[in-house]
Length: 304
Image 1 (spheres, rainbow, N blue to C red):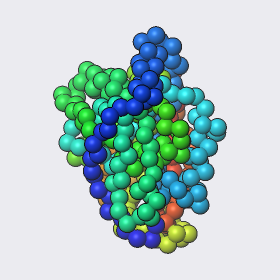
Image 2 (cartoon, one colour):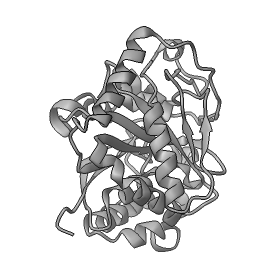
Image 3 (cartoon, helix red, strand yellow):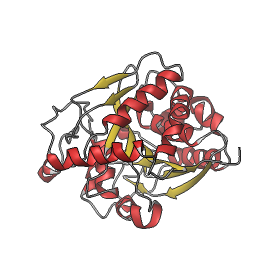
């Protein structure tokens, strides 16, 4: 964590489908068609931090994600829609594949990192639904990528959360040239997916300034503490419009996020929960001084 990392946005070619993965995908679509799935109320934003989170159990967030099914979210979703800060496109784009390849969009890490695999089945039905919902809500163009797998913003946390890799996964990109409100509206458009048993996860970092990374056990700098205090207060008190306008409202916004790609997945998860959703902190830790692993859950308000 003491060095500066460069994250590359790369693509991986999809491989022929396997029989087991095809059966999982078919069963998922049958469940959707038969209305035999459980509606979900919650969406989440996960701070995934360093790629080594996948193998380093000394990172505090490792235990949090490893205990996901037991302590955080015991329900089994029909499929997962994950929005990663490591896929940045001009227009919203979904990966529509039979099986997800594992993308190693990082360099300079231990060799065993490049041997890890997360071969979750793709979610073709979910990719189609995402396109339908976004288009119906006024997003004039939504693209499909029929080759791309899962980048480390997706597979690293999912490897700990759902290690069996047996739940279909669809990934949705962010568009860093757009703003927080744009991504919040994207989330609002996707809210009906919860009723279809889809778990919506935004994956980024609550603070993400790689140039400010310090020694492993160093305390967070004042600017990071101030930004996180503002973010927690805004979310827990339902001031979502302030979060949408964080560049003007938040202290040290540009220090916390020199580029917005790792923050916008929060806005999607926030919007997908609904306008009066209740936020909670599901994890809170630091690593490398300035890197916050704070993660949040949003629960839909069914009384509105």
